[in-house]
Image 1: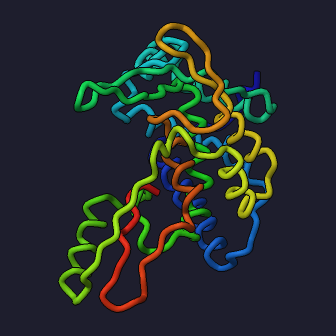
Image 2 (image 1 turned 90 degrees about the vertical axis):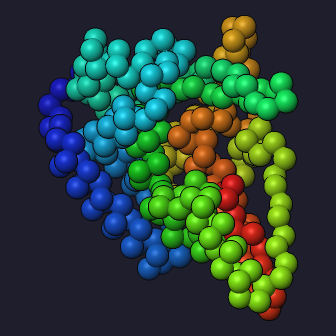
Length: 265
């Protein structure tokens, strides 16, 4: 196992990640037709992995374990952070990393209904976060101003504020829509096609595909491998929905009418 990686501090990692993301976003903005190659090496960059681990560890879901039963605290106390990151980096570099099944949990909703939540292993969450770090600044360059869902620095309240602004300046119509069972029915092929428009690195595309096809382990211990959809709750879950529909939203230019700012994707 390769153990000679130089692991930066959290602050150093954050600074390097910011520089990487700034360059990627600038290149994507300057050339809307550019397809990025050689991105995979950034996914296993020590700074990117340290930053990804830091975000996973500080997330509310850090206390939840995937199918391997390991929480972020368990990894810190037993395996060690550098042990985990070294193992991940070696597996990614050798192209032997394989996502594990996603553990399914049922979260109560109103009206005696339940929402399916997918809990990936901490190990998989770190790689997903690293993927997000690399892909997000590139794909962000293609979004329209009216898109607010699952985007950095944007939230539903911002969309509401924009609606309030429009309706206070002569706009009279607001059109609201929703995608039924969006997370359950989203097309894996559609996500891959969207990514290919900007990503030429086949290693990245194969890694995203591996996460989409990883499968789900139900509470009864039954494995499912759906051909569509992505389990709610994962880092790539929200990103996938956003990437898939990034060009489907718009604000009408007709006087007096505006579409609702997109808050799903």
